[in-house]
Image (cartoon, rainbow, N blue to C red; front, side):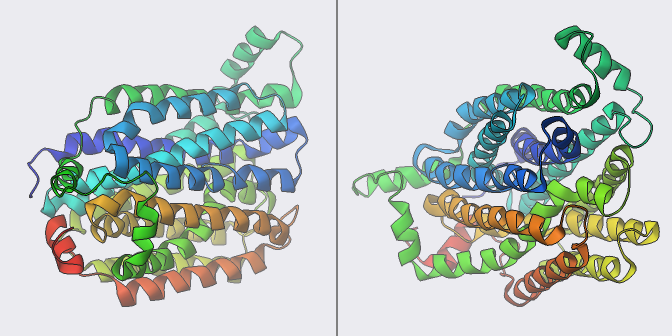
Amino acid sequence: MEKKKGSLKSTLAVSLTNYLDAGAIVAGASGLTLWQNYLNLTEMHLGWLNFISANCLGAAIGAIIGGFLADKYGRKAIYTYNMLVYMLGVLVIMLAVNFPTLLAGFLITGISVGVGVPASWTYISENSETGNRGRNICISQMAWGIGPLIILILGTLLAPATSGEAGVLFPIVQSLATTIMGDGISGAALNVFSSRIVFASLFIVALIAWLLQRRLDESAEWVAAKKAEQESGIKQKSVFSSFGELFRNKTCVRSMLFLAGIYLTWNMVCSVMGFFQPHIYETAGGLSNEMANLMAAGQWVVIILMTFICSLVVDKANQRMLYGFGVSCGVLAWIIVIMVGISSMTGLLIFTGLWAMQAGISVQTFYALWASELFPAKYRAAAQGIMFFVVRGVSAIWGLYFVNIYGEHGEGFTLAGIMMMTLFIISLVVGVIWAPKTQGKTLEQITKERYGEGY
């Protein structure tokens, strides 16, 4: 059942989910030191924020729920309600005045992100033409890059003068803070208003996304699968009944093991960098909050450019080779920063550039593409939900462990870097050896080849 042309419009609407996913992570990361100073948080507190956020456990919980709901009730059902949960989470963060409230906001936002991700990648793939499936996934990934770029630029412009000059828009922060809280507000309480405004921008984008996504048509692939299931006379299953079926099917299990092999190892590194990178640049690298955000923003410009280049070639080039090139850049980045040191500006710049190149041609792009290809429609979102649950859940635990390795002031960075490099090498080897040969085939053709008739 080849798709009609015009998938780009729906791809753009759905891609706002990726914008908000990465935006939530980077908004938390860019203001992490500000919240730390305001609420007197320790590194362990920061580890817990990462643990339950959109970066880790919150998204993991949401993904396993959202995956099964998307297969049971349709992809459109997720887009009708999920952004309302996201807006609630962001609002709680904006109003937080203590650690438990901040933690709750991160958790709610993370759950919403997790619910939306399996449906997002599945919907894009199911509504793409065969020759544009990779391109559309890359466009979705570009939104994942544009979100952090905008958030980091905004964070830089609004940054307080904690260890350098204040951002050019910080006077607006002061004016807004004194209007809301009174003239007596100062110090860390004033500075953290920069982060509150950044999260307010995500609230606005989430509202726009909700208005657009709730108008989307249901996935024709899902409708056809449901119709076939009903015509077969088989009794409709409960929401979580696909769980057992997934693990009884050997082809599904092999696919999940392969995808977990490339994505889990990659995400353990990238989840830490996504949440802690500006904080690492400030503590181990000695940069100001403004400079850390500015360097990270420059990195995201390169990421977006590389993702755009990837979108032009991914459906035509050898995907195994393209995958290998991207991950190799990440391995090389860690080798260089371990040898030169993060406190060296030269080493930091080279690391940032190579890191941006791997993130532009990222494992997540190929994971999103292959995960939507390797499973039949009736399991597609649920399988992604399970894997996303495992990946983000393990990353949550790793994030707590990482802060102990890293130390209060980055004294354990070298050891952490060696561990990161090792994880990337595993992702490289697994992906290059076992990359699937699905390029140029319809989803129905891939399903028939892998599972036979009846799927």
